[in-house]
Amino acid sequence: MDLPGGPTVAEVMAVSLFKLGIRQGETAADIGCGTGTVTKEIAKTAGLVYAVDAREEACKITEETRKNCGAENIEIYHGEALDFLASPHKRIDCAFLGGSRDIEKVLEMLVSQGARSIVVNAVLIETAVSAINKMKELGIFREAVHLQVSRSYELTGRTMFKPNNPIYIIHGERKC
Image 1: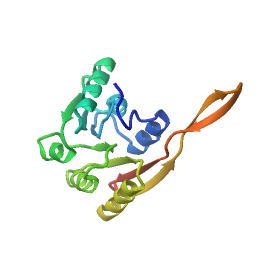
Image 2 (image 1 turned 45 degrees about the horizontal axis):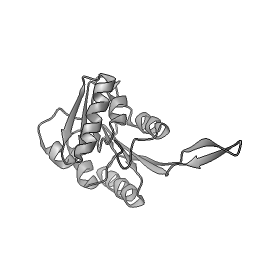
Image 3 (image 1 turned 180 degrees about the vertical axis):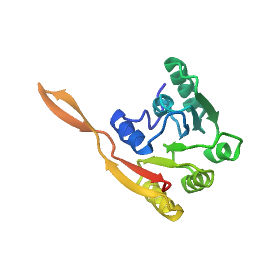
Image 4 (image 1 turned 90 degrees about the horizontal axis):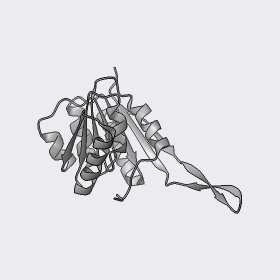
């Protein structure tokens, strides 16, 4: 099953998870979980991962991913991020945001609920600007990284590179 926008490219995921800095046993959220690729990687370290997506097909794919990797510590929530954050859940230590709907309100709620580290992946410049400005307003902005990944492929017996769409990785973290 294909899903627009996913899965997250391995190199982008590696940088994003490094910036997220999840610690053993923490509670994390993958908001806009899409295919569950990032969820699965977070689950290797986290004690609990909430995978949240408004798209029913995304939740179904994430459930398949969860089953295939045997992760018992993933809870899937089908619905809007703001509704999830308003519902009862364990305190989220780290959050990865792959979606952009209501991003400013989502960031506000995550910070007000005590999230230590937040990473936003944005393909749209407007989303990147909104995330950066909101993180600055909330006093958590650390940095933004513009990442371009290209993959090699053979063309007439030679090697050429085909670029993927560039992405902005925006990192916010509470000062310790």
